[in-house]
Length: 178
Image (cartoon, rainbow, N blue to C red; front, side, top):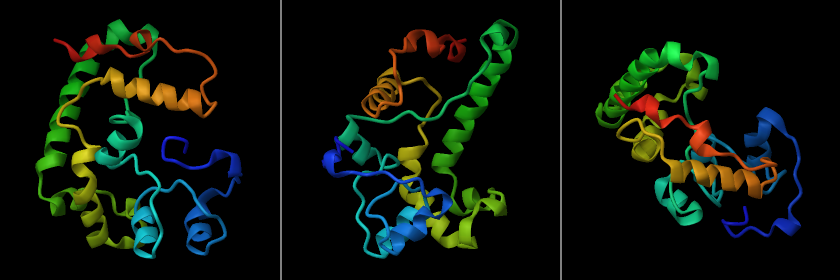
C-alpha cells in the first residue's frame, strides 16, 4: 500500500471473507484485495485499481519487478531421493508454461475444469487470461532471486515476516539444473 501511494495512517482493516467483491461493489468498503474475475468486474463498474500484481508493468512500477508468489515445495529430508522427480516436474512445468503462453486462448480456457469458472462466463475468462498471460506465465521455469527478495521485503514491510530469511538456503536452484 505504501509503495502504491496509499496513506496507511488512514487505513483500517476488516476481515470480510468471501463476500469482499459484493462489499466493494456496494461501497461498503473502500478498497480490498481481489482476484479475477472480481477485479475486471469492479473495474468495469467504475472501480479504480491501486495496484495489480498480475500485471508486469504495474509490478515493475510499484515493486521494481516481478513478484514471485508461486513455487514447488518438498520436504528437505526427501530432496536427494526425489531430485530426479523434481527435475522432471520442472521440465513438465516449463513445457506447460510455454504452451500456456502460446496456445490459442480458447484451448486454454477449454482445458480448465468447469468448476473453476466463477459465474460460467467463459468468454470473459478468455479475455482476462489473454490480457494477463504474458505477465502471469513466465517463458520458462526458473527461480528469480530478485523477485523472491521483493516478496520477502513486502512481507517484512507488512509485518508478516518477523525475521530474516536466507533465500539461498530456502530456494534450491540446483533442482532446475541438469
